[in-house]
Image (cartoon, rainbow, N blue to C red; front, side, top):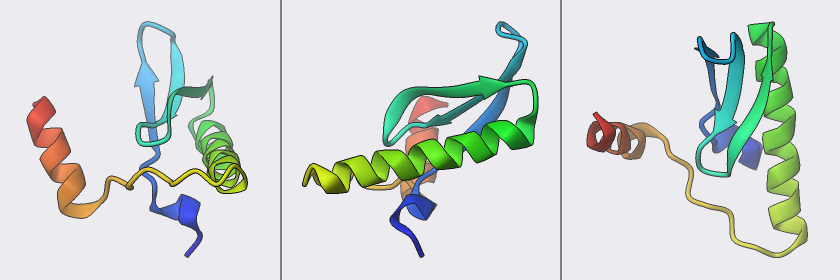
Length: 79
């Protein structure tokens, strides 16, 4: 498994922006957007991969991925 595969990738519709928005909350704010959900997801995956490579190149520790029970606990705090 690649390190970037461990990170949560969210693609959701934004009524305000009238397009799909892609984000990865553990690694960066913002992300990408577009009219095609699949293209936004593909672009988001590429951005996450590039971000992980930048962390590794700069010798910075990667943030802990939100997955499994950690993700559920985080979402419960928001709800």
